[in-house]
Image (cartoon, rainbow, N blue to C red; front, side, top):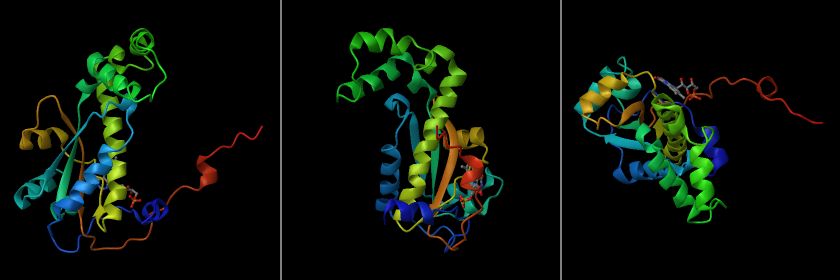
Length: 211
Ligand SMILES: Cc1cc2nc3c(=O)[nH]c(=O)nc-3n(C[C@H](O)[C@H](O)[C@H](O)COP(=O)(O)O)c2cc1C
């Protein structure tokens, strides 16, 4: 399937072929690998994923998400987490350096240390924890987008679930205290083939500067 087809075919799936029909590990791995390949701010990659396949745990995640069937009946849930600490000065610098080392940025070490890492525009740590956390969350969402497309490519469906008790999910799963839960991505074999949901027309959301 090419990208155009994946973009066309991706819709939120909330009804599954069979409640909790398992999804093959190889397919889940492909989806996770798509997340890993997503772009991120300074290549920081502040995302972590927990794959839940156990039926009882999936049911609990459904409960913690306002009893959404898309979660409760799914084949697996990818719990998508962020790590604000990955935007610390040390870790962001290391991430940027890793890109420099493959000639990804044409910077000197002096420029990295004294311009980039000292600029509030480039270095979220200079703006404090709240901004680091929000930056981490943004990157998690990019990775989730990639996963939704790879799910389609694997013949699966997904439903991005932001309406969940993030703190409750984190406590239930005992995630490390440095991580925070951002969203859930239940996946599985689709039990519905919904029409594309309405979208704003291009002319309502785009402005072209022609001169
Ligand atoms: C950040 C985010 C959070 C969402 N949370 C939920 C959710 O909790 N439950 C749900 O059923 N759909 C959720 N959705 C899916 C949207 O409702 C859906 O993408 C939108 O209605 C457009 O439909 P489509 O994905 O089929 O194109 C969420 C989507 C995003 C991007």
